[in-house]
Structures are given as structure tokens and as C-alpha cells.
Amino acid sequence: EGEETRCCVCREGYRLRPTELLGVYCFAKAVQPADSPHLAPPWLGLPYAMSTVTHFNLIHCSCHAAARSADASLRQPKREWEGATLRNGEVRCNCLVPIKSPGVNDTAYEAALATYWESLQQLAGSSGS
Image 1: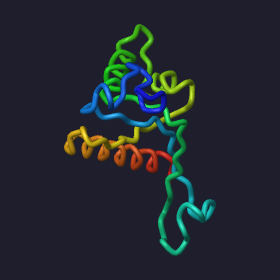
Image 2: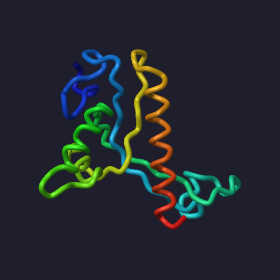
Image 3: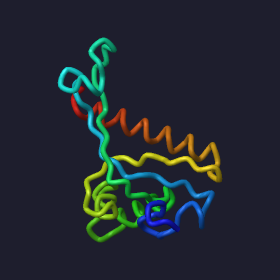
Image 4: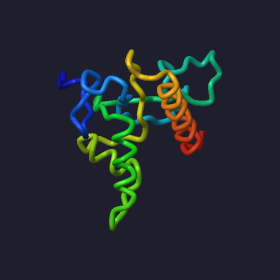
């Protein structure tokens, strides 16, 4: 596997596990369009825009789910994104962007993408926008 295309937990990627969906750990936050006109031009009239950054650390969605479950069952449980931040090389993250590959089932990709959009909506709502 290429160093850039493998899961940070199992160290395998699309070459060894072509049907397993990979995602990228990201940090997203809502910003006011007036404060960031390059993200959302004022003429669009949007109440907020999303700013997203990543260090491009990949993880299989199944590895993330297993790790999230393991983190929750610890003696001192970790919340989902606390554990993910550790797996993400101590880089803060709060969402997982799915990366489509030819071997990945469309239904699995679409479900992961819907989860990503839902997480962005929750993040935007929690920011007071």
C-alpha cells in the first residue's frame, strides 16, 4: 500500500481491502459569510458557510466505528472525536469525509456521505448560526 492511501488503524488501503470505504478525518466549523466572503459570496444569501481542514489522515469507516465502540467501553470512556483526535495524530477532528473508490458499494458510500452532511448540519447548528 502507498503510504498516502492506507488506514491509520489497520494500515491497509484500497489495494488490500478494495471494498472497504475509507474516510478522511477533518475538522469543520460554520463561519459567517460576511467574515469569509471567499467561502460564501454575499449574493448567495447563505446564513453560514462551512470551513473544513484536514491533515489527510485516512481511516476505514469500519475501523473508525470499531475504535469508537472500544473508546466508549473504556474504564474512562472517550467521546467519539476525542478518540478520533488521538488516531488522527493528535490533530483535532470532528467529521469523516468518505472517499469513493471503484470497489466500494455505492450504497455504503452514499450512507457515509449522508452521515457526513448530517454531521455538518449538526456542527452548523451548534455554532449558533
